[in-house]
Image (cartoon, rainbow, N blue to C red; front, side, top):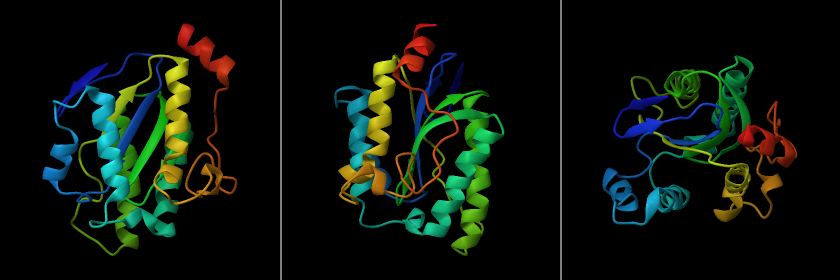
Length: 200
């Protein structure tokens, strides 16, 4: 499955996808361009640069730090799972961006349109904003090549609040699949199940 927007996206069948998207206007476009410089080594390195930039952003909207907005985004993640758009494996909601790891069950562009539009409508009501985009149009995506990479990405997602210096343990961040207080994903494969999926 392939589609093109600002850059090409390709999603093989039966593979989990790591997706990151951010609140519109979080960082200046020139800062994003610097983080994603093509001379940097590899897509993974460029993504880490962008994620660090988002974690450290001291300006721009941080709407997701509002628990009411985070709750709306969380509800939209679970709603998409319940509607059969994907099987949600892991997630984290940061102050200005979201990471998910999921098994898409419908076309990814359709999945993301639904997810973003549902959460944006209700989030904009909470922050009393009309006529503006809540989410940045483009998102970052990467499909998992193996069960080992899958587990690494899951750990990366859930440890994002720790890496950003917000909590001491991943379990302490409410808006995460690692949270002791938040609702866990409906389905989460163990290592043996992942091995079977990626070797199928």
